[in-house]
Each structure stands twice: as C-alpha cells, then as structure tokens.
Image 1: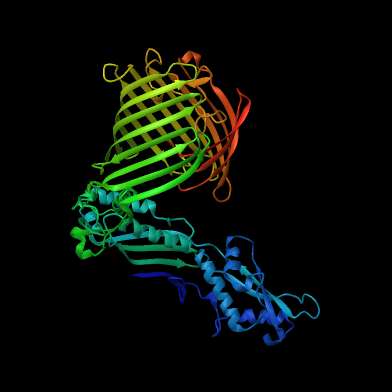
Image 2: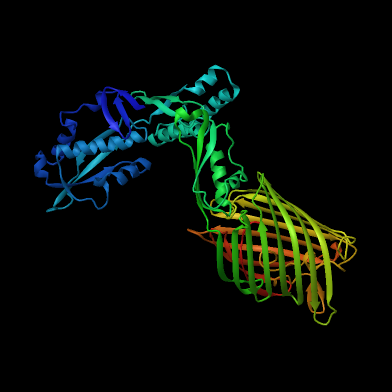
Length: 617
C-alpha cells in the first residue's frame, strides 16, 4: 500500500504521508533550507551584528491564540514556558521552520508564512535576546473531490449488481469521514481510512486492505483531492470451531451458547457476541474468539476459541449491611459441575438482623437462549411487626430475545405469619408466574440513558394446593433522561394489584408492602401497608412513584436529590400516597452505583438513612 499527498514541486515527509509541494514562490530557500530573509531579519534587528554576536536567545511565538497555536506550543520545545535559551544558528531556524510547517500541515494549512524577528533588548545587561516567530497560517485547504475505488470480491458483487453490495457502497460514501467541502486534517484523514478498512474487515471481508491512498493538494487554490483504493479480498465464511482449553466440561456445552454455524458469513460482531455469552456463563474465567484472516482459508475459516475454565467449586464468606434488614453474614457454596453434567449449584446461608434464609438453586446448561432452574428456600423475617416463616420449592424458565427477557415459574409455598396479640396464620399456595422485561439502556450497571419496562403476573387456584384463589399483577417503568454528560433525571413508576375477595389465605409473599431503599425512602423497610395491632401487613393494591436528579462530579462520585411517594392498602379508594424528599451520595462501582440517601418522610416528619446499590430492575 502507498499513502501519499501531493502539492507540486518540493518533497518532504509528514508523519506517514509524503507530501509534494505545488508552489515554489513561497518556499525559496538556500542550500541550508532556511529562507535567506530569515537570517537577515534577525541580523538587521540586532544592529547588523552577526548571528554569533547575538548570544543566547529565547523564541516567542507570535500568533493568534487558537487550536493551532496551542498545538505549536505543545509540540515545539522552544515555545514552552521553561525552554532553555539557545545559540541561534541557521540549522536551528531551519528545524523550527520545518517543525512549524509540519504541524500546520496536519491541520490543513499548506502555505504558511513564517518570519523571525529579533525583539529589542529587554533590559541592559540581559544575558539573552528574544526572537519573535511570526506565523501566518494562510488559507485552510478544503476537500474538493473524493474518489473511492474497489477491487476483490466486493467489486465483483458490484459488477453483478447485487443489491446488498450496492447498498453497502452507498453506505460507505455516507460514512466517509472526510467529505467534500470539509477542511483537511491529517487526524480526520487517518480516521476516515481506518474507519473504511475496519468496516470491511469486521463484516465478510476479513482480509480487506487499502491498496493505495492519496491526497493531492493544490496549495495555490487551497483545495485537495482524496483518492482511496480498497481491495476487499475474498468473502469469508465460517468453518468449524477449533477449541483449546476445554478440559473439565464437554464440548457440547459450547453448543448451548449459540455458537456460529459452519457456512455463516464472517462477522466480527457475531464472534464477539459468542465470546461475550461464554464469558458471562458460569463456566469460563476468560474467553477469546477469533479467526485467522488468511485468504486461502476464506471458504471455511476455522473459528478459534481459547478458553480458561473456572474452578468447579467455590466456598465464600461475606459480611455486609443493608438499611432494610440490618447487618448480615453469609456463607455461600457453588458447584458448577453437579453430577458431572455441568449443572450449576448456587447455595447460601445468610443471617441478617431482621431476616435469616437459606437456599439452594440448580441451573441447567442453557439451550437456545433458554435457562431452566429449580430450587428450594427457607426464609424467616421479622419486619414491621410481622414475623413470617416460609418454605418454598419451585422451578423456573428464563429466555432472552434481543432486549426482551421472559420468565415462567411454578412455586409451592407454605408460610406461617405471626403478629403479637393476633392468632397465628398458616397459608399455602401453588403459584404459576410469568414475567416480561424490556431493557433499552446504554449500560446495564451504570445507566445514563434509556428505559426499562417490566410486567409480572402470578396466579393461584384454590382447588390446587392453595388456600385462596388470586391473580397478582405488577407493572414497573423506569427511565433515565440525560441532560448532559454529568446530569441525569431518573423517573420510576410501579403499581400492583392482587385480584381476590380479600387478603384472607394469601401469603404475605404475594401481598404488597412498601417503604425503604429503592421504594419510598425516608420510611422504614416495608413499613407502609395495612396497620394491624401495631404491625403492618400486606395489602392488595400498591403504587410507588419517584423522581430523582443525579449530578456526577469528577471521577466516580455523584450527588442526588429525589422525591418519592407510595402506598399499599386493601383497595384503590383507600390509597393515600406517603411522600418523602431527600438527597444523597452516589459512587460508581462495577456492580452499579452505591447509593447513600437521607430521606425525610413528610407524614412521620422523620429523617432516615437508606443504603443500597441503585441497579436497574
């Protein structure tokens, strides 16, 4: 490949670009490369003294303050504030001229005028003189014409008038980053070439290359013609997987994660999606998926998959604090290869001040974007005066299609609830559930823009191992609206209803209480509901709304202001939203922003600190 820019008669090199100048009148130089008038100007201003008698000098840039002057001061040592004085020589002036011209060329100024003038002696006896470097940039060069030619399989497709190739050529011209009428900059020129090459290499044409690129500059008219020739090479199709590093798990496990199929057209994004899916699985610590872009293998290029497996078993210990349930300690055990079938066991025992639970869930290897699991749970809570002890067993299926997640489950629950001064209640329910979530956000853990919509339904039939017939409906909506790079508005709405004659026989698990972090801040956890004997039980209707403004400071810290309102009760006509306002701190972490909020409950006229990880639901 050759990369050149031409201007007419004098050659020099600018970075990777060889330029040939078009005008000789402005560049008359002696054999040293320094225009004769430069040395003469310095000598005349010094009182006809020789260059050697000037002694040491400092250089001062005389130029309008703008982007180009900032570049000269940044990249030319003689213009820095702490530059050392130097002895003036023709070689020094020649180098300065070349350095200044080279930097201006990168910004599209191909006909600069550069003069050197000695300034009057600053004070008697001063050790060095000052030389003013006067720079006139001249007119900026603009793009007059762009020519992009193709060779290889892509050009063959164009000749065959294939519509996808014609559309792609049209898109290439639309995406070209150095269009007609735009000022020439070397950075834009490099970006445009790299963007064109990468667009072909990332899709179908893995061996694409630039055969020739040229910028032909006319310094007198300050115009440039851009010429690019791209050889796409052959069209690549994927072959079989070539897997390295798989020792513990069977090869069929990779088939569960939608690998690229032999015969598919090569797409870098397709390979990255497969790599990301394997990386997010529980089985692999690191994954690299790539191909060898050898044109001789284009008909069926092997897909190279390099894996590092995770340890099969983990035992971990943890401690923490939640403003909802207090201090906690946890022991967790995980086995990713139960029965040597790649079944993933996730289990833990967690002891909190207001809650104690143990669970064991087994996740089967996915199949066609579907993840099946089953598990058991034992849970004891003492929250807002209601003590509940429950046991549950269930199965669940989760599937993903693009931005949409679907969930289906079947759970058998037995719950014993106790309120001081009230008789003990035991309820059981066999519940079928379904859920749907649509996520359209820019970052799953630190969203700045986008929205999430979620809907869930749960159904229990009295004739099937249940004490009450009911239908539970819940809907959620959350949106992030960026005002600028640092500021975001967050809106959240949640509503639910249990359709049933009354609350009798329905486990607290399927009724509604609210309050606490991530719901209505300023009120205690699950303290908003139906009052009973000094306790708070769940109701059949619920509504929560929230508005929050977050301003991110430099780094990972941010501040927030919010207003929440919500209630849970027996019927909609009794709904009376409990309101709160507050402020808080945010800190970005890989798991999401940690939120420390101080909320003021307008009904109770009390302030409360809430602590949570502010992840999107």
